[in-house]
Image (tube, rainbow, N blue to C red):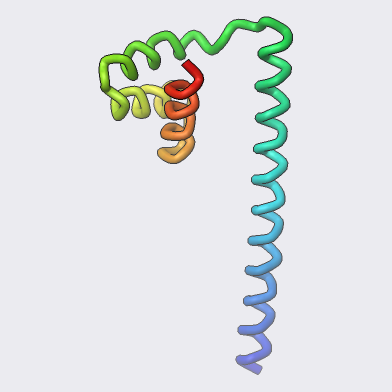
Length: 90
């Protein structure tokens, strides 16, 4: 009986993991599409980007990540990716 419960729990975990991975992929595609639409429509960038770029140019990447996280509500990894994207697109 215990083995059946362990197997069922394992299958549930695999199923949930697969769904999370699928959702992450969809979110990345949506973000890419949103970035492309923003570029083509001429919408202004997020106003915080000017301040973040200034911090990056001063070599204050850690402070820029912290500011991005506080302002945009990002996780640590998302904040790092956001700053890296700004750094390499500028």
